[in-house]
Image 1 (cartoon, rainbow, N blue to C red):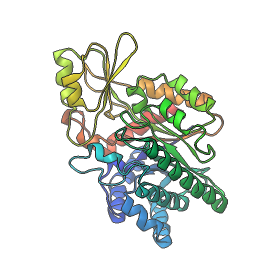
Image 2: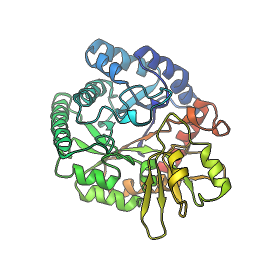
Image 3: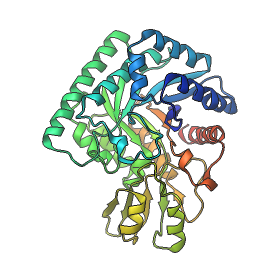
Image 4: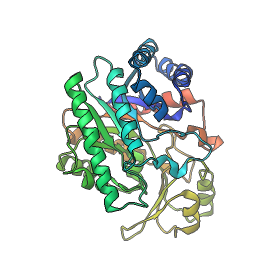
Length: 368
């Protein structure tokens, strides 16, 4: 079975005490609802928290002890959002700072230091997911060079961590629609030959993959053929609408057009071309709606949205199967990442701990 966690970026916590309160309120409740002695959590640490922990070995020991006391195990960190992930408007700011900015490198190195001390004794490795370089505009050849230099430096740190600790911490680049590395194919093309695959691989976010209309099995095969590793899978599901031109479809989609996060949309045309729009309100105004749409809105895994909307859990299931078949004996960390619970339309919500527990039950069944 793949190693399963849920991502704590769903919780608004900007300091260590707030993180512990959120774990007490939600993660412990989820573990108890599942009837388990230990629960995997994919921890999100804002940059200020990661820096404080990286500079204080005693604080890292305290956090490790607090996690163990609560029956929580951390094998993966989500280092995509730098901070402010629960501000009233996030949108494009989630892609800052880019991998051309020294702050991104420092944040990632801080996360490596923290995770190395949080890994439980039975963890084979740790993983850290990160953004796909940055938003696509602006991006120049000199930006590419600066990003490569930053990846060389974080790779050096990852190599030293392996020598010092005896267990690897791996960086997992997570492509996302609209970014420099928009698709998994883009990520493979950029990483292959640029990075050391012992230390840097990919994070396969199954919502992002579905939005791109990519084939899961061919995608995973391309990663493996390039000599890269699927280090981490973010188990997530996108919105799908087969007929976006109907009045009912547009009314249902409009409910999900909320102001906090960016919800990129892709439309599949009959000739196989894919049209792009950077956010759902824009898509409703500018896409022709002659083919099916997929929307970057992470929806709960276990509860399909109400018709005429559906979700892409079939892509998620096929992706997990492809990774299990093609990626070799090492199974990636699987992190359920529905960070959008608090911005779902009211009629699609439920108690957060109940919802996360239901998602984990669903994911365990699909991934076993």
